[in-house]
Amino acid sequence: MLQKMKKIQVIGPKKEFPQVVDLLYKEGTIHLEDVCRSVSEEEIHLTKVEKEKTAEVAEILSKISGILTTLPRIQDDATAQEAVFHQLQNKTRDEIILWAKDVIHELESVTKNLATRKSELKLSITALDRYAKILNIIQPMERELPVLENYEVTILLIQKQFEEVLHLIREEMEKITGDRFEMTSTSVDEETLATLMIFHKRYSQQVHAFIYSVNVNEVRLPQEYIGKPFYEMFAQIETNKIQKTEEMKLIDEKLAGLSVAWYQELVMLKKMFEDIGGELEEFNKFGCSEFAFVVMGWIPKKFLARVKEAVKNAYDDRVVIQELVVSSEEMEKAPTFYDNPRWVKPFEFIMKLVRPPMYSEIDPSPILAIFFPIFFGLMVGDIGYGLVIFAFALIIKRKFRAMEFVQNLTDILIISSIPTIIFGFLFGEFFGDFGEMMGWLHPVYFLGVTWNRMEAIIPMLILAIVIGVIHVFLGLIIGIINEITRKNKKHLSEKVGMLLALSGLIAIIALALEMIPAWTLYPTVTIGIIALILLIYGAGAMGPMEIMSTVGNILSYARLMAIGLASVILAFVANKLGGEMEVLAVGILIAVLLHALNIALAMFSPSIHSMRLHLVEFFSKFYEGGGTVYKPFKKEM
Image (cartoon, rainbow, N blue to C red):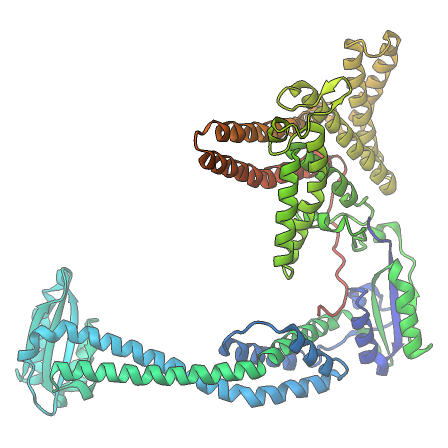
């Protein structure tokens, strides 16, 4: 259910403002509103509170994040982080900022220098690999390389389709050097030529300027390699790579040591400054006059007394929390806060797939928590499958404790596995018909029907349609309650008209099947006429057409039978194929694989269709959404 909300105003002397905000932040119950927009200028002139220290906190957070990025990641140690938290939790914000600055001063320059040097070494190794590749390209021309001082060697890489450019380069080199140069080419691969040029250093600037102007890919060897035999150049490159790699290892060791010493503290500081940043970002919703401050927002009724007591104990009568009287229109804008029992909480995750409910709407989460497992269990309906799904969800839940959405999904599977086992007992299914073949259980005989899904197809279809009628009727009843709350006459007429129209159709079917007395025909016709009038008034001339759409919604519940039948057929095939194998081990393997596939499908498909039946067929009868999610001003840690 949605918790009842109260709109409050917190007023106190301006000098107490920072401490009051910290108290409210620790209490973590108020959904803030922009007080400067809510309070008129005639009542009191308020100005927005400056976002003090926001830039400083953002800078510190950025530096801490940068240091963490530099250090190698290690596994989080909850005990060590908690120790840091306890060390800092009673300090003021300014003291925490000073603490963080000391840590940054200790680590920033060291880690930055190490990271910069490591990056330089990586680039150097990449360059050495490139030089080795160039030497491999020009090695066939080794004999043509002169061993001369004061001469420069450069290599041009040119695509063969532009080979004619070599003629232009040669002509220009003749002009620049006075024909005092050497130039030779060789094929690198099918597409590339390597052209080697040797010229005196006095022409270096002009030659390189020309090469740059014609946009040719130029590769220059470092001077230390020029004039040496190729085997010496390769050896020198390899030696340099080894030296730089060893230096990188030493840097990694230093960074690893710093990570061991500081990582947990840095992680906790990062969380704390994200928290402080979140608090400061909300400061623009507060207002101050010359002598007072004002905070305004919504608070769940269940928390109001606690917050009042906390403020009273800390500030006596200097700070006052006042409940505000609001109009019904303003209450429509109140944030929605789910306050459900523990067994309903996981199904609030499904509610995130749609817009949050309006404050005046009935929270459908408890109904979802009841019908979703029933639909799931009806479609899967196997004791063995239910036990496997329960065990699988329990293992995943324990393995991924930190992932909230996984916890919600596994909780839904665990809850849904219970009706799966119950329906499995009703249908007499344990891994399909395996339990029945072993004589362990049999389908239950109830209401004159043996509930074997392979045989009771028509009863299963009728059961699915009856569930659809109940579910859709429930949706319409909730819709009627919502419209009464909103005092919307037209929508109320539409919901009541649809409820009466469906009731009339059911009565007509019952009359045709002689399930009710003939005298009920006249009341049924009367109900139908009233329903049409209400539908036309509420939804216009096309209102009666919606009856067929709603009937389609009800018929959609036939999937409860169809998907369940598909599941039991696949389980039956698994047992049949496994039993017909001559080799026992092969038969067991085939049966296990097919059952595993069926269980995987059973966890996925019934979940999707259960959600569809709720979000499309059920919610369309009452749910509008478009509310504001309750986001309290609180510490996230």
